[in-house]
Image (tube, rainbow, N blue to C red; front, side, top):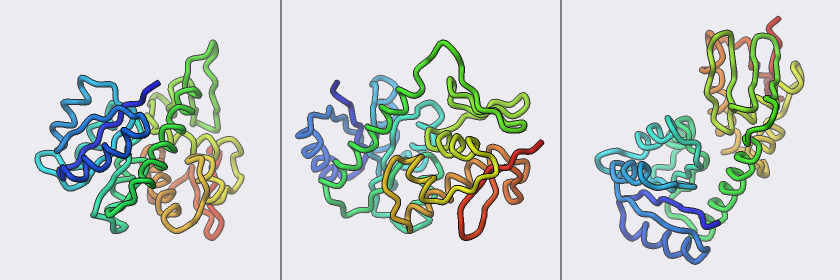
Length: 236
């Protein structure tokens, strides 16, 4: 099956370079030069992955990612010259799956694209409907596999694929401490190197706490164990 990739960047030379390399890998490429144009394309095309710049006219990359994440769970890779920690944390926190700084190696972009598409395919296979809905319940939190969401009381909480995988791991053994390496390699299906991976994990844990906790700054469910990692506490 030919996968469709949408490249969103206001620099035509960047779009042309990425298109050239990705088309050689037999991907179907669509191009947009600002966020507004990208949203129009998304409404009419089935997109498998997006490559998104941050600084663009009309609708910037941050706004675009936020809008896309309201409806779609496709992989999003940021490619940007704005590459300090705050930019990365904000982009990942809004729902991006990866961050590649400019200038970039096109071959690295291809490798990252292929990795994200593999994970996306695996995620869709996991999410395929089954005859029974499998649920994981710890205290008053229910993790529902059929909808890839969490249920707390009468509230259904929508999760991203990464948030779901992190929560699934932590809830599988309440009280057990999982290291950042264990969390990263389970949720991202990639090798853990530390550094940037630590920041990425911290952002997603923070987002999970915002969704689950009454007071995210004083979490009851997802506890930090300093120097070790995180654990899920059963609130009986």
